[in-house]
Length: 117
Image 1 (cartoon, rainbow, N blue to C red):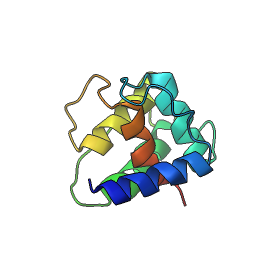
Image 2 (cartoon, helix red, strand yellow; image 1 turned 45 degrees about the vertical axis):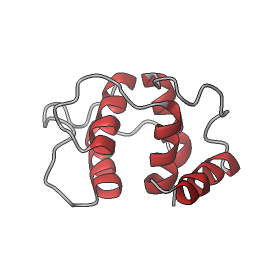
Image 3 (spheres, rainbow, N blue to C red; image 1 turned 90 degrees about the vertical axis):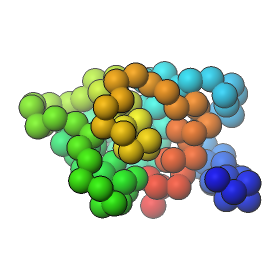
Image 4 (cartoon, rainbow, N blue to C red; image 1 turned 180 degrees about the vertical axis):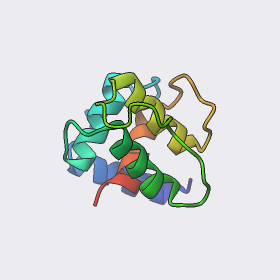
């Protein structure tokens, strides 16, 4: 990513107070990813289906027919881990991901770029 764009996304995240800018190169935990997503979207407590559709529409943007979740229990509230894995799959465009692998800074950049209105 170009440095100028990266810096503009980080500035946007800083202005919206999405994160505290500490440990940018550490792998983000499920809790941290969930908190940043909720702050960026300004929402709380949605269903698994809602998060999956939002991540597909805003992050993947219809570029592929990738599924970030399964159809089971779609109206149940996701756990922090489920929400973080769905987000990671969408951000990396890889439906086979089963572990968290984004740094804290990468999470904030994706949220600032794709999820903030």
